[in-house]
Amino acid sequence: MGQKAHPIGNRLGIIRGWDSNWFGGNHYADKLVEDEKIRKYLSARISKGGVSKVVIERTLKRITVTIHTARPGIVIGKGGQEVDKIKEELKKLTKKEVQINIFEIKRPELDAQLVAEGIAKQLEARISFRRAMKTTIASTMRMGAEGIKVMTSGRLGGAEMARTEQYKEGRIPLHTFRADIDYALAEALTTYGKIGVKVWICKGEVYGKRDLSPNIGGTSAASGKGGRPEGAAAFGGRGNERGGERGGERRGGDRKQGGGNDRRGPGAPGGGNQRGGGSRPGGPNRSGGPGAGGAGGSRPGGNRPGGPGKR
Image 1: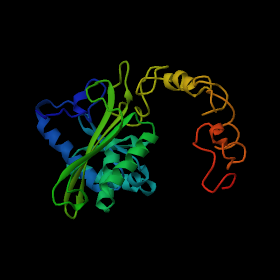
Image 2: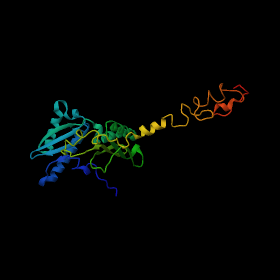
Image 3: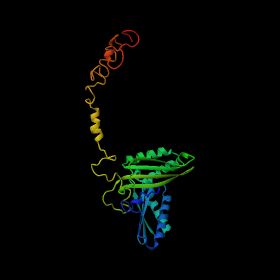
Image 4: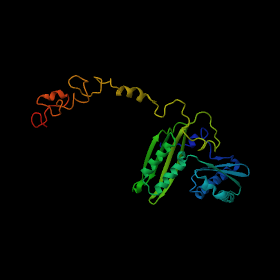
């Protein structure tokens, strides 16, 4: 009970590729540990570079590291100095030849890792968690996502007892394998403890066979609303039937008894102008004569208090 599948791991080999791409052989464990070291090192080294993911590919003598980042300028540095430094540091760490590629993320609002880290940074800066979550959801939906769910857990707002809060917008079909769902977890290190931030973003559905090579099935190639068939209604599925038929029928003048622009006419349904016949209750002059009240239609009596014919 309560054991949920990781949305990305669940789709591996169907619409998602692996972030590490190599054959392990007899040294599988060593390579796995080395991958983890590279990723940890890079996330600490370029903490402000907006790094979404690190894809590692290996040949016999060379490791190719592809860094997916929203801020390539920070990672590359002035004249490529920063990249060269990182290259040398990774050579020392792995004792192998290293090549670094940098892949720019065009729309960071549609990348779950960057969205989660953005919320975590706001929580560390003591911004209200509700405000941080709602503004993030709005900006992601504006960029064309089909749905987003954000969940934060921990001592929210510095409360004594930890709790979980979540907000959703659009659709996030976690059981649909062809739905392109990006998922990420980030942690905000606040003064009163850790707050976990989870983000699910649905970018549409993938129809047909997809190339699973790690840098193609990734962020920039698969952004946008994705695979809704042409002519289908937006999510909710009802098209325009409400506004067209029902709305038009209800607002037309013929629907109510007695056409024209009336609401309540004197005597018969559908007479003169708006409310009573003539002006307001009590005949032509508003205050009216002693017996003129009935002609006004809706409001009682012609005379207001103060004698016949006076206000």
